Length: 242
Image 1 (cartoon, rainbow, N blue to C red):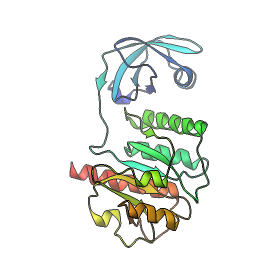
Image 2 (cartoon, rainbow, N blue to C red; image 1 turned 180 degrees about the horizontal axis):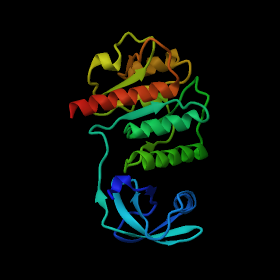
Image 3 (cartoon, rainbow, N blue to C red; image 1 turned 60 degrees about the horizontal axis):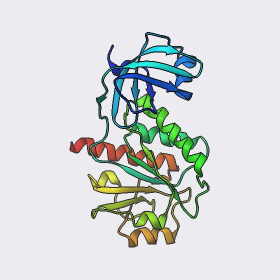
Image 4 (cartoon, rainbow, N blue to C red; image 1 turned 135 degrees about the vertical axis):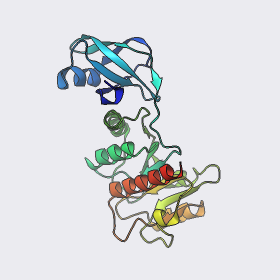
């Protein structure tokens, strides 16, 4: 049986050959949800880019003992990192956002604090987002976790450009072409504002720092739709160039 077809679990331990242990939610998922028993094979990944095939040795109420083969580096990442700063939507829409961005290979998500934003993520909310990343990586096969950064304001983001790369922000009123029409975009950051968009002062800050606005089409998109559209277009551009 090939490794990609086996059930995948996230290991908080650094992967090594030999004995490993799953605890907490992952142990519960293995034993109580999937009802896997001794002798079954699974794939473990630790978020560092490596994975390993492991055989279940012992099962218990709170912990699973496994014997692992030699870990291997298996990259399913885009050749160029895609980073998105997003003013988070409400409720379950956050889970959809995280799931789709993880599947599309986004390297980092920064919760963006904006004047019109209605979600101000705290510590508990960030941890919930990171759990969504783990679940999405288990499903899609990524071995590196999409990073969930600490929240940042627009002023901080505007200053974050590095290496002369251009930052781009979604703006339905922009006179610049869409990402597709512009061709391959060399960018460090993409930004999506809240419902109602960035306000004039925020747009002025971004433009003053060298950021460029762009359109995503003739309609007004929800936050998560805009972010997923950007990630999909950028992934296609990267894959087409490599």
